[in-house]
Length: 343
Image 1: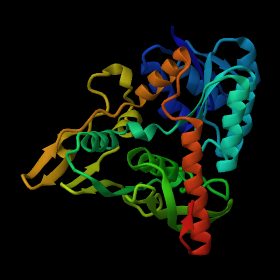
Image 2 (image 1 turned 90 degrees about the horizontal axis):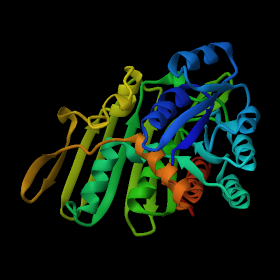
Image 3 (image 1 turned 90 degrees about the vertical axis):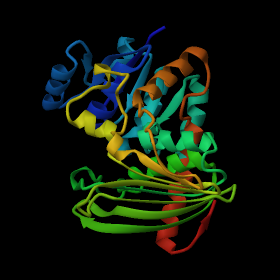
């Protein structure tokens, strides 16, 4: 059974991080896109000539052409659109952050149960090549008992900083980096955060952050990101009882997409960090390069479609999104008060 997907919004997210991966995913079909602006409609027609275009989510729902939709509009619009789609009987993938706060996440979780649909959150960066490689090292016990993880994601990318009080980098890249640590190390019990702010016409905007998370199991993680500091750097460091691992990746899937490639061109070779950027594992036996695991955002969509068909949990649940938003809410409170915040 093929699951037919629509996309609501065709900005950078819809164009680059959803449409190509729906198209590449097994048992998934991209059938509709909601777009209004003439330039956006023209872009959709050029990219996906066989896909239906609608001017509103209501028109898409009324057409009956989709089983599920991805909501990838600006953050302040997502909650209402997610509710509208679910009320219309569609399964929903909500881009991150999928709710204004943790309370809003619980509201959407309960609404999905009421409407009897599947609700997932697009924390696609669990499927990054470097994170998949770290997960395999942890699962294979090659690092022993994990003590801590350091993760930084620095982009020279001021144009994509979502400005104003409803935007900011904490809810943007912070959603991904926090979710990755929750996935790798489990739930969090305390948060300490510092935010870097810039004054923009839309209002004061957080443009960088550092966060320390203490996990319930005693492990800790340290994450940071920026978009205005004029350099690009992605690094992971993992410390364990048997040794350590460090990698500096290239964000290979994003770079490939922006270079005009699509995963469907060659699924077997898609999303692998080049050998020049393989990480290094250091133990008593010495240091060795670790072949990168495949990064595959399309597998998120394959798993989501499977959850619809089988009535099982989606790959990232609304409650997963709730846990991430709890940490982000605590991080903002920590930054405002200069204190450690317990969850």
